[in-house]
Length: 295
Length: 193
Image 1 (cartoon, rainbow over the protein chains, first blue to last red):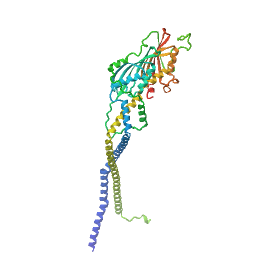
Image 2: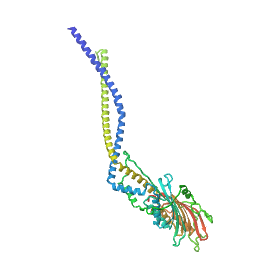
Image 3: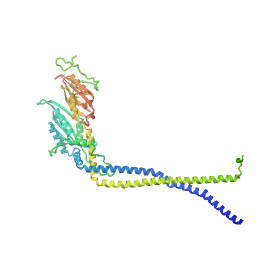
């Protein structure tokens, strides 16, 4: 019996030791190793990749929204196709794709005729993007005009209202002696710049379409374009000399007027600024109808 | 006093402390493992959710792209219109309306002042002409710089900014005053009107 008890006691001691080892050594070891492995193999990579994934998702959501808006914009354009086509036609007439020089010359001629001025000179030249005032490829039509002052103003208004976009970068005019009709004859020279823009876009699926054909800004602008005067191409055989750009530049550098050259009894005056203008002005009274100041 | 007497042998006390420390370290390591498992589960679910959303968004994007591609002609036309529209807007807003300038000059010119030559450039005008008297010339110059001038275009009251009388001379043959002035103006005021 004592031997049996001893064996039982030894067995229970062994079980206790095994249990003790498992509880106090194996489980903590497994737990620590498991924790370290989780940290290194999963938690850290996940921690690093989560913001990247979120950013990727954000980017895709933004792209999806852009594309959704684009689809609705395109659908709207399809719905308003007739208006869209009409607007495209108008814009193409105002800003042409090609120089179309004869048509422009004809428009210039018609503008002069409509204003009542007489067109004395008509020539044209080309200027590239970098050299033109418009920043686009441009055809410049040089015009020499004889008219009255009112006709000159009317011509300017017609130019500003012409359907094919034209602008006058600078101009000069001189008034000659009175004509038979007692109206001063104004001789003016200026160039009329008409830019042209060849556009060939391609479909870029992921890029939004910026134009909103239903916006007030666009509609107002289009109604302004619709109000411009359209000139039919009447004189298809119109002829004009082509000027080289160098010639045009030389012409621009020419002296402004002859008055500056006249040194006869000239009294130079200092430059003046607004309000405090110390110009040599006489008292208002004139003596015996004289135009000169009395002392 | 009886409470203070500890009959447990010292070696047994040390043994008990050891086993307590071992037990608590076991509990601590298991807790750490549980926390790590919890954090892993959080990352797993979050990443799975994000990944599934990315997949879903990708499929939606592809669907939208195919819709857009089917309307590529409309898109090209819209882009062409946009380019021309933008260019035209810039051209129209940057164009100076010289008709307004000429009218304003004429409105501010006294009747016995006549302009004989004028060179108009963006921001600057050179004018030469004759005046019936010095007074008229002075009046013309004052009118040009008068920001309260009433007879002109109300929107162009402050169009002209500086004036320089470069020369003035008396023409005795016809009792007139010849002048040459250089006038600067705000080009922007003539644009977009």
